[in-house]
Length: 527
Image (cartoon, rainbow, N blue to C red):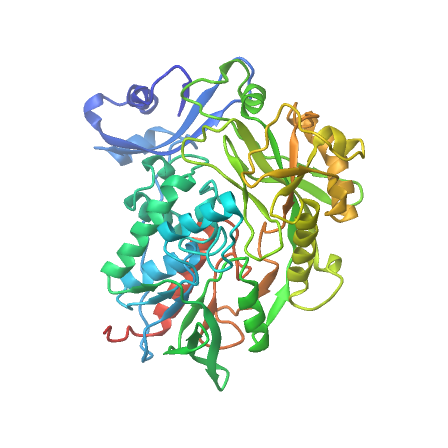
């Protein structure tokens, strides 16, 4: 169904009756399943809806139409797996409270397994205070920061829930988040987002649900080693001393848990380096993006701030693309290790900031790492982050360069009309001093081409803030068709394990890990 921007969603009812050629009494009810914006034409903007409709005489209505737009709605209700019979002596342990860990915990708790969830960082409220201290005073807590703590790295982001995967479990994720306080529109918006401010409350409610169903969530509990026997997990060691027995462990560590990757490597868990991307955050005035995307409708109250998604493939085989675009957002300091600068994007639910920002990234392959070691990608990231730290003044300020200067190969010495949003402070510089040559050259080729797709992208005063290195995990923990790692009983899941990207896909992967456990084991007696 399609409505113009000037029509209210309440007009859907009359449009449905007309399209289906039925009387009003034949319409039992309807619900918006999906809503998107069509802004391709210069003179009009439409809202496009997919609508679930309940009719008194559904079969007779369908027989009247040979119309691909009218079909039986699919059954998207989540179905729990049949539980297994193998005895489980101890409660399942889950490492990490990012999306994968939380939703593995939800499923196992709902099915009566009473999981124990471990988080190296603090609860979300304590974590928010630790992040504030870093942004305002440069006091970095390596165990509790933008990367580590309740909710994972996504807690300090835009809270985007877009995903390319098609899986009925996605609906379960969105439904549970809505029950935990996320906005109702995430169930139908084409580009749903929660916002960092609301997401913090949502993850807290999900934690409370796990506990209410017999699970346990423990903070400031870093898993420092695994207890193994005959290539099977027997338990974990917490904070170097405490031992906890467990023959089943879901490993959902997040993409920045470098010390955990090192521990797994030392334990003999099979890992391989994987591709990821590096680059910068690029900031433009949000009003510029609105004007380009929405033309005369820019600022319309029904539209909100505009976004974009761009890509360019160069003749040399490299690609540059925008990622994790934050309308009305800010660039944030996202370091998790001392003496390294890392950037990311974040926005509140309202997306009311002056700037739009996005990652501008170039893909890197294991061949670029200079080593075949499974953790070579980690070393590659650290090298860039250290360079950015020094270039920014060695106090967690971020080095920045104006797009005009970047394209003309000259260091920036001043800022222009775009005020950087990076709260820790910035230092004008030449970003080729902290980025690989092939990344710099690819971005130089891409920016003018992306400007042809989004006029103003090459705005000379647009700000590039370095460095973004944590686009995805640099490793993949190898697992079999039953979701187990080379060490039996260990179930790697989510973005950090190298098997997902983004909040929803990571949550779905955590659900799959929980299902793999539940389909094999009978639930233990929860104490």
